[in-house]
Amino acid sequence: MDRLDYRVGDIVKLKKPHPCGSSEWEILRVGADFRLKCTGCGHQIMIARKLVEKNTRGLKRDEP
Image 1 (cartoon, one colour):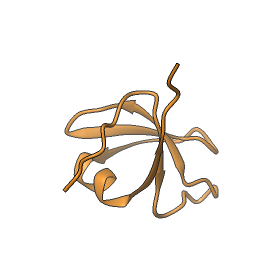
Image 2: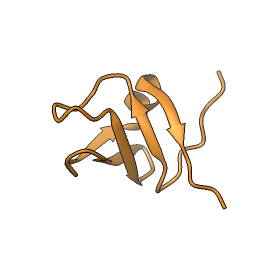
Image 3: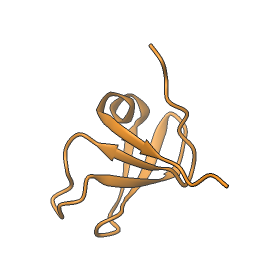
């Protein structure tokens, strides 16, 4: 299985949207658990890496 390279600052699109309506999250911390911030309302969550990898539908990165 090809694993994505997650980095702090990336925007990840998850399968299910947040109750505010946004399905995009900014990665604030990477490790065994991720800290994600909703790009819609700013709510922050901690979520297991396994769940993020399973539910990722897209990854955006700002590269120079």
